[in-house]
Length: 232
Ligand code: FPP
Image 1 (cartoon, rainbow, N blue to C red):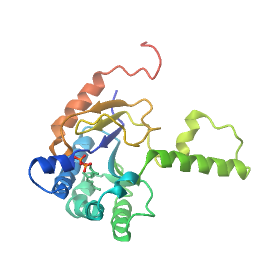
Image 2 (image 1 turned 60 degrees about the vertical axis):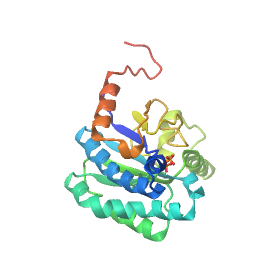
Image 3 (image 1 turned 90 degrees about the vertical axis):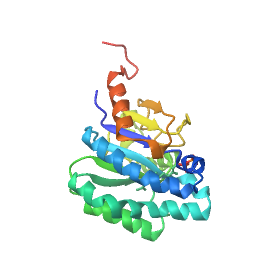
Image 4 (image 1 turned 45 degrees about the horizontal axis):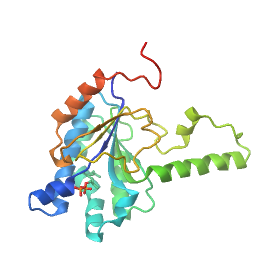
């Protein structure tokens, strides 16, 4: 089975930098280059949607300096790589709440989304100011409003809930990779990961390569996904 939707928690930038006597932001800087490599590799491997956890709702708790730097990453990334992404027919998307994102960062994201909106290749989706529990609560509110306004009955089924989520246009996640050794989901795509294969790898994000991705995708193909059923 192919990976249609690949999701990645890009962890370990800070630790990678610290281990080299560098400041944390240098890890994020290196991480941006790895985003480019991962996106190009995923596109070449036939992935339809690549969702990257770039900034969680919990990341606001970091120092003002670090938050400020993380908010500059989209500009850094698109200035360097948007041309190449365009050539590869890649479309940029964002999952998360744009409202609280600083205006200049929001502008950079919005214009990359706009510029690539007619591209028909892989979707490179950045989860920015994103938290899955909040996404689910907002979806529940949206549904409740429809019921209260008489637009629909109180008859929601599991397979209809996706349409209220921020990722409604994407298929469920097939494979989720988290770098840097932690085995947790950190409030990332909890609903969408229901039947995903999970890979926790020891490498920190700055050391993740196209080769690593290829390997993991090969592994995925060998797995027997039964979605709760029995092997046929
Ligand atoms: C986690 O490492 C990483 C982040 C919070 C930021 C990840 C973002 C990027 C790699 C680039 C995003 C690119 C764009 C274009 C938006 P950490 O700092 O938590 O590492 P640590 O656990 O070692 O401290």
